[in-house]
Length: 348
Ligand SMILES: [Zn+2]
Image 1 (cartoon, protein in one colour):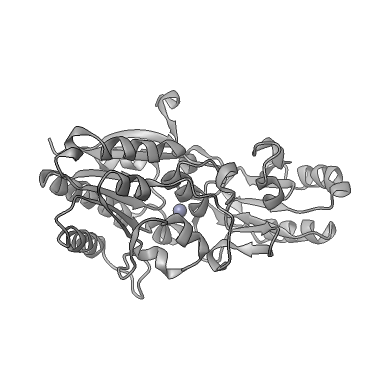
Image 2: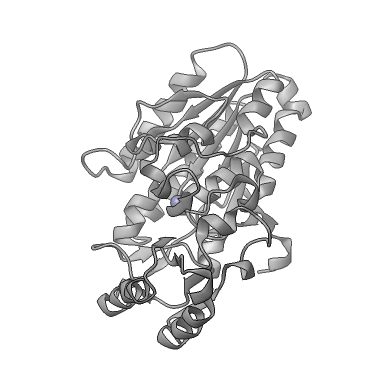
């Protein structure tokens, strides 16, 4: 595959904006966007034969909170300031983004919902599985949208068959389309990632993708412009208790806090300890993870450098620390984590 054709994830907003103001949209057609958490480009290409698919490069770290925000707002990680799951803020200290309910200082530069309203659409976010963790980040992500929180696809109490999940998606989107005569932008979130963490890209995920292709074609035939996109892929990751212990021991040895996002972790050493910590960790994690200064991955001078701390640990193989029962994870820089689809079904 030609990597040079991939566009940055931050281009997603502009692509939607172009559709919203296109001639076809001007004649009152709905725009339906399926946000499928955890689907890599390779799998989209294999299972969506009737879509036109472009590659997009996810952000670093390749983690949901960071990537969805860049995607919908068009802001880089440095611009929105959300590096991932556990990080430091000046106001509160160390936070977990999914449990944080106070301000996050994310600038409001609009997003796909604001663009849709400006173009005369009703802007709807079927937040669905995201409502399993209501938090300030989610409020920021969905700013400007009419938020519909009642549906659950993967975050329900019991596991559902792919046929049932796709039927629920179809029903939720139809319900919202039927509510108004105005053209709709409907962004619908489906957290396939929850299933993939535990089961990988098994037959159920592949079946879901096949059914999504059929559903998208069905919607496109009703005149809708149908898009599917994703935030990152996942890669096989086996929990290694020795690596987990070595990460904890590193923080303890330097008396510092630890944060991170899945396959990328970071440390907050005192400035005077940093060089020594880098050297120590490079030796300790050789062949397992890349150890580097955070300026190597983030723009110098940006506030994000305060938030992520100064020493990064980025998994390079399938052995790392992850949650109990998880077999796949994300957050680092392997191509299956980074390359994601922008798929468009035209209906012809
Ligand atoms: Zn995700």
